[in-house]
Image 1 (tube, rainbow, N blue to C red):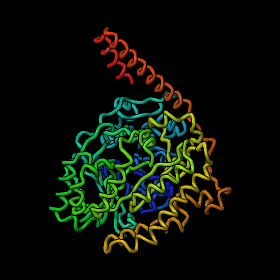
Image 2: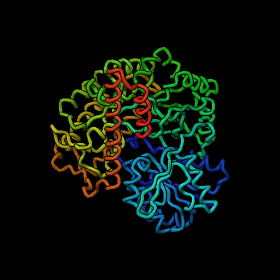
Image 3: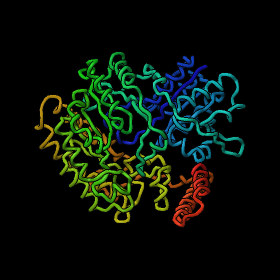
Image 4: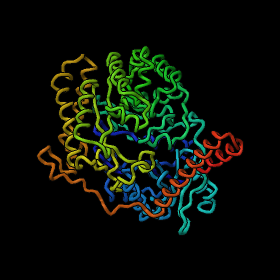
Length: 542
């Protein structure tokens, strides 16, 4: 049985300015399939190789697969749908499968606009996809599709979702197959070395209102640190990886296992062979201040902090559970430990003003991180914050939901002005760093790394790929009137998806009403046992 996995050819001008990122999902899915005896697996990285539709058609005809699998985050959804449309046309007998976070939560939207998709895998895919492949291989597709948890598909005019599949409990049982990737093409620009994105933990116990990761992964699980280091050792030895970024939302949550992970890297001498970076919260840096030099010894050189906002009001709205003062202190602690620190700010909500953008710049310059990033707020349609502000969202062209395009239109300025003010922050921050900091601060690795980061920014700026500036016709403040974000205004929410949103909102409203009623009754001293039972039933419905 032949299985072809495809990474769609989507580019946004965001994180990719630092290099080509290896699609880790392919390695983990393929490894789990191989453990079940499936060895005829092929991978097409249309993104890294900038494959045209015609190139993709030719590859699919040549491979003649039985199953075609594709993934999509929200901005790449239309490209992924097109990939599977091409599969329908070129290899019509193959089962067409879509996975990823967007399809998981928006399956009614996706199946409505792309009826050629046979089935959607909802949630983390290793176990669900393997069971689906086994079903197809045994000739039980589509007869038995309703028996497989974690799927969504169209059955005539009905859109069906089977029961949610449990999360993967034994992450160490997944042995990724990294050999499918063309490693010479995955280069981290700041260091000029091969880069990997292994996974140590899944999930997040925090519920930031703008984020969907905690909803997708559901419960928080951590792998055996030795197993993770085994994987990294393979990447370094067999694929010459010189830099890796842990894919985790926050790998430092489990302090004990993160320490064990660092010690294992040191014990095996990998800290001298590979450098690495993480994303984490300022509270963990504050907590581990005495361990930062140990983390640096283990090879940790880059920490991206979700500082998010310069005003406490915004942090509270994001449900970050952090304080502005902690952000500054965490950055100072990392700098003192000789760990490069990147501060992340979310901008572009409906209440953004030129003054608030200026405040984030002043704050960033006062904090003095090595790098700063201003990401446009992207209203993921499956997050709590979206539910709060969705009446103000007017653009449903999901290809622009990419952190670099202003989806929201602030009341105090238009989108072109918002983009210009954000670029103004970038210009000031990095020109000052380039002139007064990067060439003169530190020596050896520190200077080389910072100049490499500057090179990545300059390269993307020169090519007009940074923030999609070339496509948006932005050339500086003088070009504001000519900026065009090219929104496809014909894109709307499918009726089935809208009905689902409204039903979800109604259930949430009823649950809130029950909780309030229960609280009132308890305050009056009556019916506590019955009300408690009703509350549990209500929670189950929600």
